[in-house]
Image 1: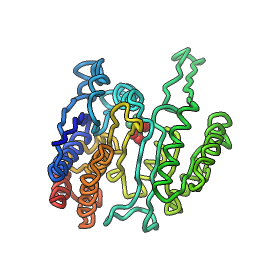
Image 2 (image 1 turned 90 degrees about the vertical axis):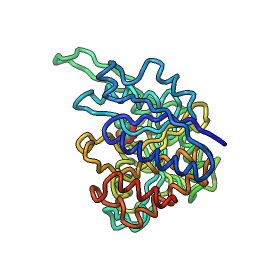
Image 3 (image 1 turned 120 degrees about the vertical axis):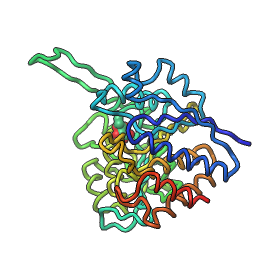
Image 4 (image 1 turned 90 degrees about the horizontal axis):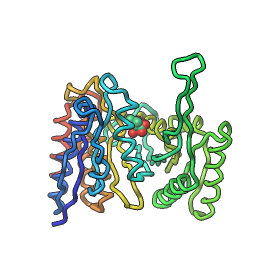
Length: 347
Ligand code: IPM
Ligand code: MN
């Protein structure tokens, strides 16, 4: 029987119960499709930091490298560990070290879920650059604590990085409805963003079957609210993609539905699957976290592993549950009830 080695990093807060829920559903889907998922749980989290002084062991990245994929819940508990420490100690290094340069975030309304917009239907795939740009970590502070204090945070856009994410976007657009929206702010940022636009124009010549439109990030924010049905694939830089995908989550009914996949398209290292939402410490112990985003992310993991029919079965089970009104509104059902409904639909 085919078996996959999965690293589980539940992390903090609601990351723990939603990962557990996703794992249960994925296990059942695997059994149904005749393969097995062999999970190893790593307790790396803010808890772990308080005990050990690091978010993961020094050889954490090397440990993860041998896995077929990583399923992650959420990282961060700012009241206990500063976000800049916890995220730069766990989540962000994994994305960079494993060259997970394409962060895939689908936004559409599940059956039975009412979004806040008039739009009845839309199907947007945001592809966020995930290893450089505004998240490069280049910069520093001098004259700390004085009137002359200076903080510099430099965005880094490389030809390699920009080309590969845009090419990935063009390929996805070709597989979908043939429309690519490239998002920049080249009217104000005249170096990096003009460069991005130039690369978009150059690559477009290789994809005559894809219709390309360049948008500025501000106009794209408005468009996602006013005319989301006009969008197909949206490609954006790391920070712009981060912001647009919370907006995407909002228009699809909330962060409880927004899934994401940090993909290494070259498959030189494991990819990582995680919901867009964070650890939500305020509701962490209430048992009401919506596991759908995590389960959907798990379906994307199965798809990435090549287990297409199991992935489709998980998506169909999510949709069967929401179509019955389960998990469609915040707090209406408990995590365990939503998980049970998805599991039952998988039968
Ligand atoms: C996300 C999150 C992270 C990001 C944070 C937690 C660093 O918001 O995955 O969207 O900005 O990438
Ligand atoms: Mn985010």
